[in-house]
Length: 221
Image (tube, rainbow, N blue to C red; front, top):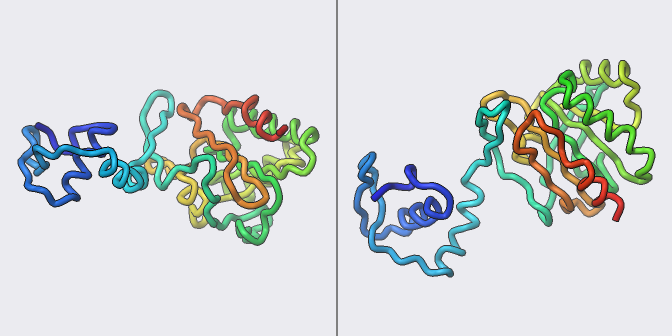
C-alpha cells in the first residue's frame, strides 16, 4: 500500500481525502508515511473533496521535453478572471478591473525575444485588423523597456504589451508562472466584457504555438 506521494491522478485524490478525513491510518510501504486503509469512498465524498484537490495540485508543462511546474490555479472556461496588476511600456500601472475593458485576449509568453513568441504576437497583431472591438494583450516577464523596443522594431501596433516583471501578479493569478524559470508559460485566454473566461489554453509544450484556429473561431462567434 502506498501514500498519496506515491499515487497519481484520482488515486492521489482518494488517498489525500482519506488522510484529511481523520480515519484510522496505516503506513505507506515505500516511505512509511501514514495512509488510511479500508476506506470505501462514495461518489459524494469524492465529489466533496475534488474542489480541494483541484486547488492544491499544480499543472506541469514541458520545455524541450523537460517538465516544469506552473504555480497558481489554472483557469477554466466559465471562471471569473482574477484580479491582477501589470506594468505598461511607460511604467504605468495597469489594473485588471479599472483599465482593461471589453472583449479581451491575453497572450502569455516566456519572452518576446524568442522565435515562437515573436511569431505568435505578430500573428495576432496581423489578425487584429479582422477583429474589431477585440483588445489583445501580450503579457510576459520582459522589462517594459524591452517590450517597447521590440514592438517598435517589428511594427506591433495592435497588440498591447504588458509586463508582469514587478509583482508576478498575472502569472500567479492565472496559473501561468513557471516556478523553475520565473517566466510565464505559453497560454491564451479570451475574456468577455463581464470578466468571464470564454477560452483557456495552456500549451503543453512551451516551444509550440497555441491553437490559432480555435482562438480565432471563438472570437468570431
